[in-house]
Image 1 (cartoon, rainbow, N blue to C red):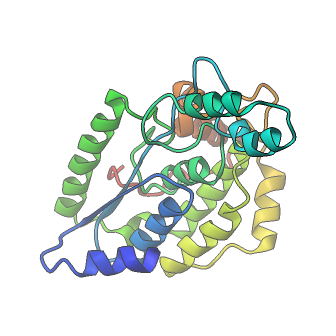
Image 2: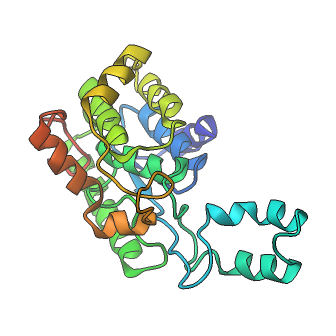
Length: 250
């Protein structure tokens, strides 16, 4: 997918910058790899946010077991159908738990590739359009300043992303994707020893599905301040580099 995205970007003869819009657990890491590979162009990532949980019913994580529960007679076909239809309370967006899709949004913001407080936004809400408009404005400003992806993605930003990943207790799939993004950007890939060091240094701060203990849905992480709030705590702990460049130009 990353190869296809890069080919699409390179196929535009008058391209001046690239905006990547992605949401899911495959497309979002691939988009980050593609943007990282276009290192001599301005680029920005626009995450698709997360689906709102149902007012009544099961979250998108638990709902994945309805087939097994039905086959074992734990629920009826009617109950399975109703639960399945209620699981997602808004259109589009990633999962209501911090799986690979949601973690990738968090990591993209921590890398500086997307606007602050854009990860995990509630899908289908006005903030969606607002994020898209502000991202477009930021991309135009990047092009005007001559700011490129290679200015945003650095060894320090990769390490910041690893620290934020640890603080969120994110998906272990990102232990594959972050090195792949670094490789696409022409940067050294984090080693097992680097991951061990970060995870011993950084405490888990975020209480979210599926890690608990209270199991908040991902949208509540956004409402509680999202990635910027977590990074403020990590700044106080002295475990992130605050001098890295982001797509905002700051």
